Image (cartoon, rainbow, N blue to C red; front, side, top):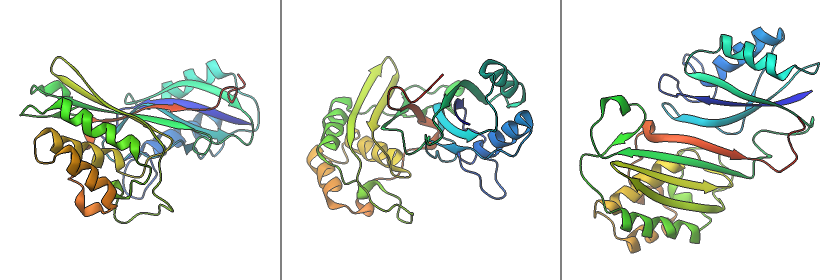
Length: 248
């Protein structure tokens, strides 16, 4: 039987989502927990990967078990074993062919920026010491919706077969001394959001015009993009699936 598990995590001490040698990952910690609670080897599959230091307020994984679970009891037991920086939020029975990655039709990321130095946000928001032109950044962000090839914002060496993404939303919002960038698409390239944010911030700083930002996208040249924004401000915020996928 296949289950989707909704989790959230503080990525500060993890070297990303995916299991890797000689480095602690969220997937490693989760799989160890599932294996202990369910008393069988469990290997989870995530809806996507997050990099070192990146957080997730909503991430989904799927895993298989031989028998149906008492979801409430299972969640209780998962959370007793999981460390304080990972939480199991919901557990859903799904069809056996359901896939946490391939069945997701949209993903949303948030990027948080603090305009005032705050020691309590140092791992959870990127501190900008100088103000930026938010209106110009929104003008540039709107340009993203005109394109579907984001080669410019892809990592140079990756296993990506194509660089096309359907972009649904890209907008900056300011509330007090905090900025939040919301970006929603059907898929994202590895490292893409941080590269987009870094380049948009250069628009906000006056280093790029909106027209130049569009030229950067159209160039399909990674070297034209700005440096990636720091990991601590980035959150995987929402993963969306077709209605009716969750059986119970």
